[in-house]
Length: 189
Picture (cartoon, rainbow, N blue to C red):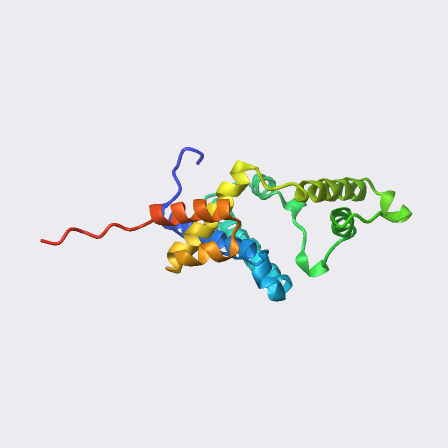
């Protein structure tokens, strides 16, 4: 089973869904920009949950195929990492609030500090807050963001919009990505 390539219809379905996820991720990034501040809470939550749900569809398609081809149920559960699943319907948990407290420079209550995961998430939030005070300079993050924005701009035929809301270095990279994606026209006789 491990040496059998993925069936082409499944491969194409996964590629389609992952492309949809990437567009949703780009919109999440877009709604972090200052010029759309009026709607950022709603739209970042919509698009990030859309992306998560679509990636879940990818996992379930692959899992259903594995189940169909006879994969051991315990192996499948292990590959799905079912212990990591958290339901959004429960809302933010204590460790999520600890992370936000760290991001916002707030202290944790004595009760919250008693849990190791809360302390860890609070510390992570503090680290993210410290990083936010410095200019973004991680080339991999900047390139990923530029690729997402460039792809979206090209697909929407709106490359000029890149200059209006992105930091200049990301806008320049995104423009190059969009230009690279230019489809050459077939030669006419």
